[in-house]
Each structure stands twice: as C-alpha cells, then as structure tokens.
Length: 427
Image 1 (cartoon, rainbow, N blue to C red):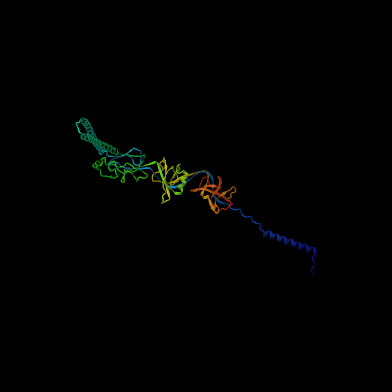
Image 2: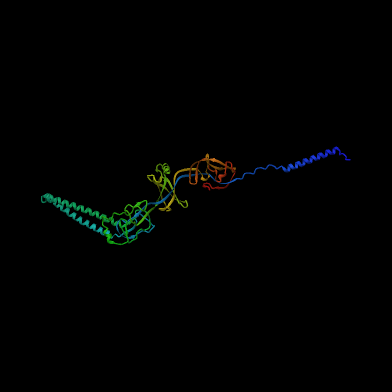
C-alpha cells in the first residue's frame, strides 16, 4: 500500500523543478543569445596628392620651331679667273671684311694698265685740242679763221673730253675688278664647308671649271663683262642669292650670333598675340627648348610676324631673335618654342590630373585635417600643358588629390600615400 508524500515535500519538489527549468532556460538563453556586433571601421582609400601653391605664372603659346641663321650669305666670285688661294678654315669664325679667297689678279692688273694708258693718251689729246681751240678763238677774233673752223675745233675738244670720261670709267671698272679678285666676307659669321678648291676656274655667274686656262681668264677680264657678278647674297636660306641665277659658290657664311627661330601659330592664337603685345608694339618673350630633354636652350624676343595668314594651313609665321651666346642653337635645328602671352602674378597652380569634370562642372577633391575627401567646385583661368591655373575654389596650401579620385565620393576616408612637393605637376 503506497504511502502518500506530505504536502510540504511536494511543494518543495515543485519549486526545485521550476528553479531547475528556469536555470536551464537561462543557460540556454545565455548560450544561444549572441551580442550585436559593431560594424568594422571603414578602410581609408590610398591616394596621391599635391599641395596647391601660389606662384608667378606665364601663359604661353607653344609651337614647333626651326633655327636658322640670322643672315646667310652664299659667297660667289665677282670676276672670272683661276682661284689661287682660300684663306679660311672650314667651320671657323670669320669677320666682316676678312679675305676668304683670291682669284688670280694678273689679268685684271693688265687690263687696268691698259685702261690707265688709254686714259693718259686721251688726256694728252684733249690737252692739245684745247690749245688748238684757244688759237682758233684768237684767229677768229682777228679774222684769220672762219666760224666753221672754230666750231669744228670746239667739236674736237668735246669729243676728246668724252673719250677721257670713258677712259676714266674704264679705269674705275678695272680697279673695281681688281679689288674683286680678293673675295671678302660681308658679315661676321661662321664659315661652312669649302665648296671650291684652289686651282679651279671660277666665274662671275657661279660656274666652276677644274681645267685651268689663264688665257680664258684674261679674255674674260674685260671691264665690260667682269663686274656683273655678286660676291654674296643675304637671305633667309643658303639656296637663294641675288647676284647669280645658279652655280656653285665658294662657301656659305652663316651668322649665328644672333640667330633666328621661325615658327607658326594658328590664326586664333595670333589674335591673342596681337592683343597681348599691343599690335606688336611691345616685345614678347620667347623660350627655345630642346626637343629631346626639354632643357631651355636660350631666351629671346619676338622680332617679326608675317603680313598674311597662310590660307592653306590657317597659320601665321613668326620669327624670334636669340642672342645665342653659348651657340646652343644651330641653323637647321628643330626646337620647342614657348611664346609668353600674359604674366599672372601669384597664380594658384595645380596639376591638370587633379581636375575632374562632373555634371555640374569641374571640381577637385580636397583632403582635410580629418583625412576625409571633400568635393570642391573650381573655375580655371587656363590650362597649359600638364598644369591648370585656378581662378576660384582652391587656395594656396590646400592638399589636392591627383591620383585615386575615381573611387572617391564626398566624405570618403583617405590615406595620402604620396604627397608630391609643392610645384610638382603630380603623377
């Protein structure tokens, strides 16, 4: 027979069972419940940046230019004859008036002697005719000579005077041809490669013969035909000349101090140059730089602008003058030309790579003290090469993102992995 448990014991067991269930529930809740995790902090985006700076900046027009001699003279003989001497060293500096070469002067000395002899003979004849004229004048006054005889004697005197004047011209021409036997440099410059060797026959028309023939030189030494040549021709290139239609010269002398650089600019840029120079009344600075290294070779000024626009290319040719003290510019050399148009003092300059374009215009990303990127709208004055000149939106000292901005948004956390030095165009 089962004995019934006391009531107080049943209540105790019930409480213990409830407490155990509660403990189990609390343990299960503690085990199963996970505390809420905090979101991980954002990773900063690595970027490259540069610090904006204020500096004097010059707006310029750039072009490809070619250096050429300021004056280029092709030296020709002005008389025909045998070239007996060349007095210059190839590639050497020559002075204006320096004797470069000599033509055999003997045929021209002979012609001068003949002309001086003829002059003396005709002067003697003129003196006799004048004495006869005085006698006829006295006789005619006394009735011893007719009027016709007197007029005939006056005509003889006039004829002899004309002969003397002709002879004097022949003497002057012979002396001039004799001077032309010494071929002089018309300018200070640098001699090129010798084009004719001594022993060749040279001609006033530029032709050269290797067959020595002094008799032909003597026959061509007549005053009427030997001074028609030209010893030199100042031009913009060695191929043109004013004293000869062709043929070989003796040497080309190029003036390289100063030297010229010619280049062309578009018609639109040409209008800017006119405004910047006041119609070319003020000189504009020009820099010539090496095409290989970008090094500035020399600085000069704009000296001339062509008087027309080339309709085929829509450009205007310009010419700049360089002192060229170090002779770093050489005729025929191609250089990069930068023509200054406007000076901008204390301009804010940043790399062009920092400038972005959005639907509302141009902007940059500024890096603040909290390392967060901020979009900043900007306005530009001009873009020149890899550099942008800022009108508004950026001040000196601002840190501007130059690389990595494609993944940035306003407020992005950034890490400046590379800060370029001030004034650097950036990566």
